[in-house]
Amino acid sequence: MSRQDAARAVAGLPASPHRRSFDGLVTARLPASGTRPVATPFRAGEVSFHAVDRLHTAGANRTTEPRRVLSSTYYADGTRIIPEPTAMSGAWRDFVSGVRPGDVAASPLNPVVGIRRPA
Figure 1 (tube, rainbow, N blue to C red):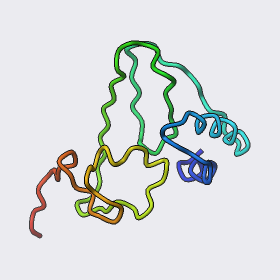
Figure 2: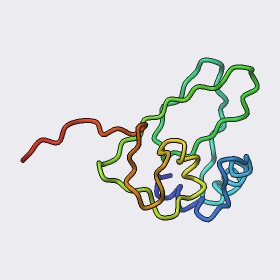
Figure 3: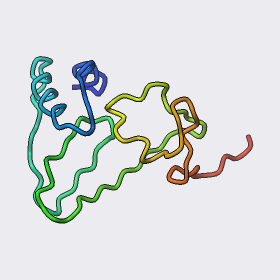
Figure 4: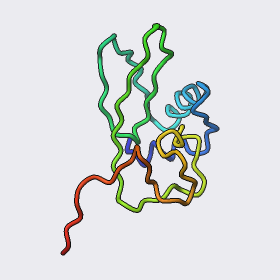
């Protein structure tokens, strides 16, 4: 299933980054579009590398240790926060604190990297 088809398949699902219900809704919706989700648990110490727009989830952390995540997101200088961030935008305010919808997505956690050279 292409990324675009996956996005269409789950469009309109009520979602919240703070509730687990979205995972169940996606799992129920995808087979109707001809896709069978792969639910293979990872063992301790395993890692996943995937594109940010791939549907993915993680079960509850049943340990006393925090789960570590490293996320790299690249976007063009001057990119703005969409006017109405969706539930799928997750806790976006944690990564661009002090920035409102419509503002340039710039914060101490989102530095401009690279140098634009004159043409």
